[in-house]
Image (tube, rainbow, N blue to C red; front, side, top):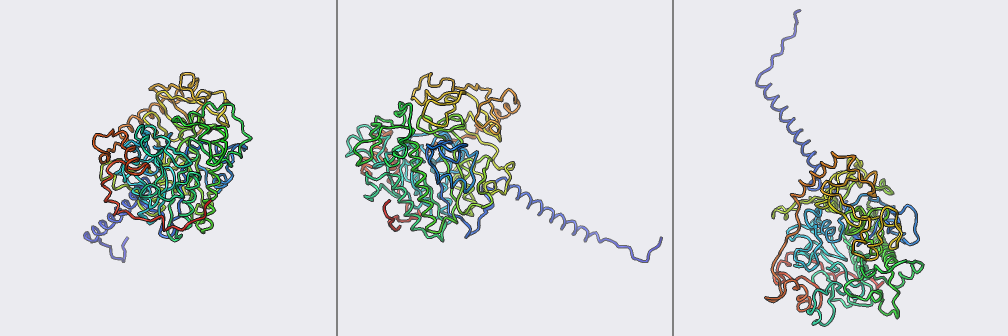
Length: 620
């Protein structure tokens, strides 16, 4: 058994060195893998996907009170009352979002998208516009700030409702270089007069006229064209949008957030759009008083300046005409982008802020419930993503994974090439963002079974996890509307007639009230997205686990508790009406900030863009 080769002898020092090197390599590999896993789980704060030069222009459309069945792309069969050909074309040019969630009322949704947080971690109560805690906390970073810091030219047009008690609450301080819009939940479409200023009482009566709610970037609107009471407000918004697009240097990425008044009450519409729906009949108009509140003349709200005789107010006709007008406006916006050769590089996001109001002309058929309700009809929004920059391979598809409107904060931040982490909030001990980057799901890189969002706490009584929806307590107005609203047709599973007629007594609830008790109800939203069947008895373990999970989540809930600055009204003035006093005595009859107004020196640190430098666009 002898051998001519010498036997190899390993040097113990060399062997130790090799083992140490191998250990180091393995450690680096494990560390790299760990970083990859963390990025996959928390890519809302890491891993920018875009590179300079590839960032798309972003147009974000947040529609007010749009019902699920009030757009053609959600209808199984066409309806002659639904005239949304351009919106449908846009939806089919991109991807429709089957489970795009919002809150059941407007302010919470608007705060969620701007802050990147679920309402339960930022604002889950709907405060009036004049409350100091209304809207988004001042110590959180807004979506506009993120994109502005990433090099985007940022603009806001339309309904704000994200707070206005201090200058820090306004669009300018939230990162929008220019803005044109109103603060309250609704104003008059002719003249932009405040519709909810009755609370001001004698303060307003002593002023020269009704207060105006229209703000242009740094102060009340001064342009006489914007104050023209004979021009419909939404056309003023459209003119500003076209002006922004026309004056934009397409080499820079554009972020335009448009929040139209349409289709929110009081549903004022130009006569030429109402005329298109003269064929419609409504079997009741008694509910119209719910849409036009505050003692305003119902038919008078339908009066277009210069029109000798207003049309009779018909809520469903008003609503259908409002949505048809929105369709034309979006067509104009896209046309402007195409003329500017920007459409091919544009990503367009379209969503409602909540479900349609059953007593306001909308319909969420076949979903259960509507606005102000925690049923799917109140929190599942009509939504899609489109635009020339959207991946061609995904066009015409439907995404069924769970997406919350708060997820756009991280998704757009990643596309802009920046981290979505909110350093300002972290420094003040406020909740971090909940936003999840959804681009992998939207672009088709992720399969729906791997959709990143699994869990969605809606309120302290509702939790969604995957296909399951857990509800505990008592829930009113749980009926199903018919394909058309407002009328008395609805399926056999419940009726909303009482609500539609404006009743608030027990009869209005009829058989639409569901008592889940503290044990809870359970719905499978994949097999039963219309929430007809409570399957709690068949799934006791899931019911128990979801109830326990919600209890744990509630501990971390947060509602905006800001009380920034002090009232700017004279000492001893009614603090609840300080906004009214400031509007009358400081802003010349316009709504504006009413706390800490004397502390405006910080504006010198803000990026500015004078809207007067934008080129004019011909009147519509």
